[in-house]
Length: 287
Image 1 (cartoon, rainbow, N blue to C red):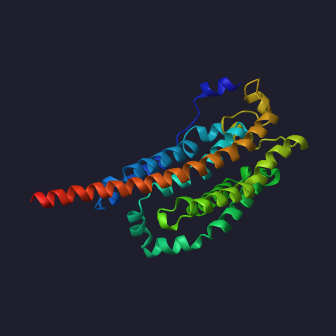
Image 2 (image 1 turned 180 degrees about the vertical axis):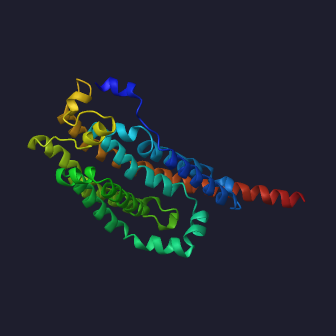
Image 3 (image 1 turned 135 degrees about the horizontal axis):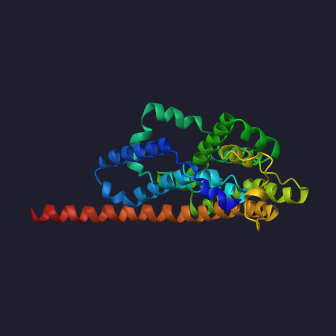
């Protein structure tokens, strides 16, 4: 049955979302070119485009439907959306560009609506854990508006909780020692969501409500279980265990990578500016 799904050809691409991301990219490039030293930020441009590409794959590509087949795929989608995309976007915004954008009165008011990073982290962890409780998960999967609003709120909070590590302004980031402590605390706060998947294995509560969405979309009987759709070697208990471990692994990897990328980008921009300044002085000297 799993292989027949690929032959149906009913996997869709979200074209409006793609056009929206392309439009956002064009605006980003337009304002980036207005900066006097825009060439010094090419690495950050690559990070932003990587983030937008990952976001589209997770949300607007057929993978968004494929992630409904198992909890491990679903957790991979959620982990990339909340632990990979936000820090890459923040790192992909040059500070001079960020200054121009944040000085806009409307955007400044919107940014003030977000709570402080630690509060955002706690709220995100609570919402993330509640989202994967059977009662909440069953309700949100049956009400698309609530589900989209819930996911959007977590996505907005994820930007706030990542700012201490990847703020566009390097001076607003934590020190290396503080970053390690913040990463440790964030791992502890997110631990209940991981344990929820593992405890469900022993409690016998292994039910995937996302399958109801995908079976309805593909016009399949709602009585179908994951064993009817997924490959015969699929094990639902192992799937939930992998989902819990995968979330913590991606979160830990993202923290380590974001800290390193942030420091390298800051050093690279500083070096490029110094090189560009030397070239300008040489030109002035020759003149």
